[in-house]
Length: 327
Image 1: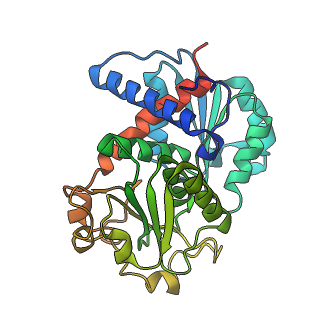
Image 2 (image 1 turned 180 degrees about the vertical axis):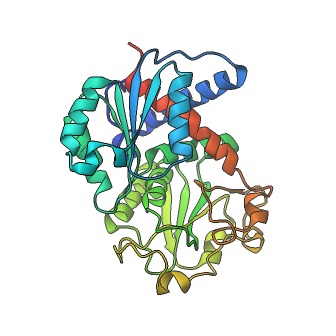
């Protein structure tokens, strides 16, 4: 077990070793048990964290706000449209000042080509931990909760067949940060990962290269396919989720000819019948119901989406406890 966390930034899980991630999971599990038993966990008494959001949020905002309250601290929610950021204040100035006011800064900025750079600039100048609540490239909080859910459901992750599958959706042009985080993380824990998408929805080449390196180092594997049924066949875990074609088309248009040409990429009962008998369906939520997935699947016996969402609370508490600390 690793214990050196206090004061570190949390931009991507790539910055943490497997042993450190296992410590995060261990703390998350402990906090989850104590939450279930009604045991107080006052590990961050009188600590303040600032939550900066450039976009909307349900699970992320509330897991952080509820989480630090349950740890004895306080969250300041900051809608960046009401901050001086909207008048051009720099990431440096914001980070320096907020880090003098409290004990942690958490930020969601998913603007393509901007978000990760913004977070790293804040981290460069902040004297307290900067936590990534999702950027254009990474969503480490979601990745940690996903890993926790898989460990809970299967215990042993070695040789587990996990399929990350693009799915049709029209709500908005979604970031690539969830599949990027998953494809980098899961092979590190011995999983056999299949990444499936229609041509035109590629992830960055450097992501695939890093994921293959992770697979080789830790005994997992990565396969890429453009055949949807291949990804579902004999899978233990399926994660059908939309992401935008940012890599091939950085424009902000939501619905285009490429998207409309791939309406058949949908998680249906017929697709789930191809998976293993005890397979699970996961999604970071919100799902675009009846586009990404049939209601009978997301509300059906394979679905663990609400367990997965609950784990966002416990992993958020673990990350804040370890990074901010109580001393």
